[in-house]
Image (cartoon, rainbow, N blue to C red):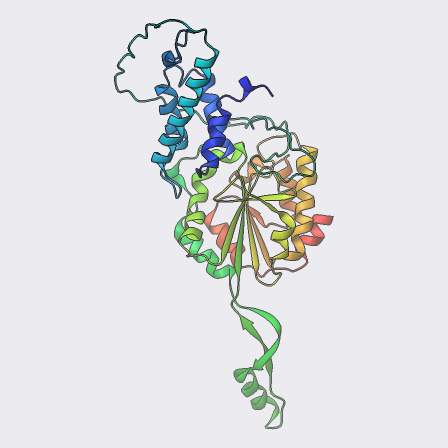
Length: 378
């Protein structure tokens, strides 16, 4: 891919190297904004002097897209790196210009304060550079290529219509982490023993019951592909419950379209983790998995790579978990004729739309240890 196709990628990478947790989606937003003319309104380099290049619009645009309130908020770091970047660029352009005696540098025009227009979100996955074979992905993650645009007919979701409240999330977790028998320990069941003595006499045997332990951990896997961006607010109550330790222990990982050989850290999206290492830390009596993905419900055409990747992942996942709930933000009538319908059948009803009543119902159901293996391999 040419440098013109990746404008200011070196600036983006320098900010990442200095500690700003920027994602590929944020760089793609800059590309879209530049393509619509934002950030380059006063770009007037005429080959006279590099100071004629007005960088203020580009700086304002990058600050809007990349500097925002977050755990790694650092406006001073951004300004320092951006200023050093501009100085280097000016020096490089100065070296390429013909030497002239005492060039006249016109004064920079004063600009009235204004507000940049809102940059629209992307619709299609950005094209990623290919990874060399044998090297773990670091900065970019590739999913199934060539997925069509989202059909937005009938889709309306605003932050005021979030179906899963914090209360619903908390109640569901309490049901999911109910006590379960772990190990070979047994204890005396006093009430059952008394009932047995009452019915059979004094010399009846004592009644034992398995020792139940209330140990559970949550693994949340979030699809961060472009088609899931409009539904991000609906996931926030669950993410907040984990961040505030109302659900603990818990881990969050990212994937794009489907989990392949790697998962990606929630707070540092460029950090790749081997899927096998995550699976090895799971426990079939403790680990509860929640998956946040549309599962191919946004397109009527079933992508073969997408389908095979998801089935392969479920086959690897099935022996490692205690329970599974797949949260699909699209309503069930949008699943018909798509990959989501097939997956919902294979998961035996564990895929659900965003409905509080349905989530509480699934959370109360006892986990079946063989349900997912049999369905995924069917």
